[in-house]
Length: 304
Ligand code: GLU
Image (cartoon, rainbow, N blue to C red; front, top):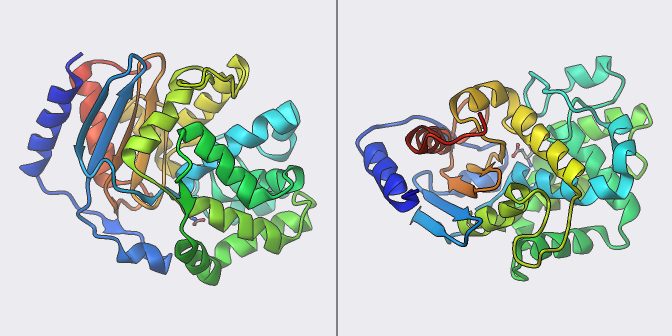
């Protein structure tokens, strides 16, 4: 497959069209990002690397970090995890409180904010030094010890993240948060502030294209069943309440973040990451979705 040519063609097409979207501004620090940044990186399991634009520039991965948190927490609790968080698409905005109230504090899935807060609680309970240990885990997955939190972004969200405070407090009232709400939120905000480039994200996501086995070290991070389940959650819940449309148009499991990143995998073949900060109303990168729709259309390859 001529991935580089396909990416070049997509890039040329996109330059001829104009797209809308707005940079996330509810986290003040994210509003500072240049809206026109654009990068793509595609990594194949046979060692190919193909890219366009700012593929090496780091950005705030935000909710994409929820995938790494789940990857760490799932083997710790095993199937017991699903007693505390569901596996259904929410059909609601990622930070909605309503559903959580009438579903007794059990979030619909681990990729909406409430679900990621439960996963954060699991990590806070099971790690000696949660923020440090989680970062080391992500660095190990990425094979890169320079990956780090952006404290300014984390603190900026801590100052303004009232909905997340409300979600965590509501779940605590239902008994679904074990630790202090402040401790869980502190971990969650730092987790969301991790910065990675498209290249680093795409290489890290090869884990999910490789059924849970680390692509370089060959270490098994998730067993085959866990990897299947995690990819299923990416497919059905990875794109806020636009997961149906993303699957309809793109046909790959993946995850987006309000920093404008999207990472997706074509199992047994490749992983790909795109960054463009302008978001649609659902919170997904407008250009990111365009790129991936065109990629699976032009390659004729998707999971379907
Ligand atoms: N830190 C963001 C929040 O909690 C993550 C949102 C996202 O990327 O979906 O609101």
